[in-house]
Length: 302
Image 1 (tube, helix red, strand yellow):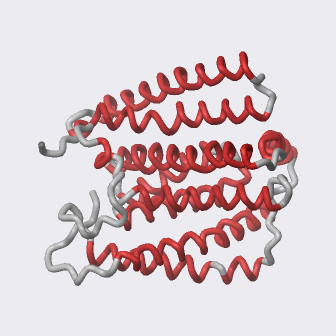
Image 2 (cartoon, rainbow, N blue to C red; image 1 turned 135 degrees about the vertical axis):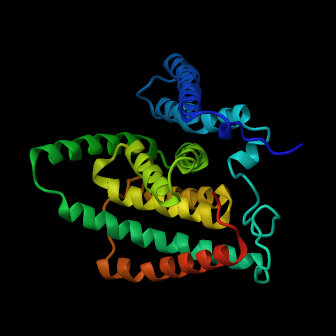
């Protein structure tokens, strides 16, 4: 059976409305089930209740809509979402005629390790710069207060350092968000943007939406950077699994660092800025190498 992508025949309005409708129904269904279950079982203010609510919202808003939409829009949902083996430059879909000899797979994985390691320092550096340029105005003080409320809510989940709580938080704060957000933003949203705009604009637009969705205005710059990095990682490898992997490691580092600190959420940098700058070296090296592999062995994705 030939691969079929129905969105290529649909109008932009139909495609967007279909995805919006699927997302809305999914959020109402899974969010409603989660809220009803928590209200009758744990209570919405308990750590267990907050964990279940976060899980149901992430499931309904980010994870399930791309999966449902891919079923509607294609006869091969995995291919539609780029849920293909990592990397894909060995496949006939992406390989280029007369391309250079395919490098060992471990080259790509080393690149991803370098990118992931360097991304920690890049995000830390951008976070420091963002904090230093925020003006001391009432408007920004209110935003700081709002973000502090979010941190306190997360602190409720993190204060229990038992293994069962760690396992629950790992699912809710690492696995589900990484898988769901990548499928939603890089799997669907970026694909839709690319249908109408150049690739770079699609990456920027997707990354803006990704940063705004986190509802952390003071962290917009590092979140936007992560969005761009994840988009290019997916583009260069041809597989969304690369972005999911990097996203999971980034979230996992934040979670386990909080447990290492006794359940305290670490949101202020403790690194000297010179270390953050030096950490950009592996990031640049990994991105350059990954781009080089992609350019030599893969076609440009439309």
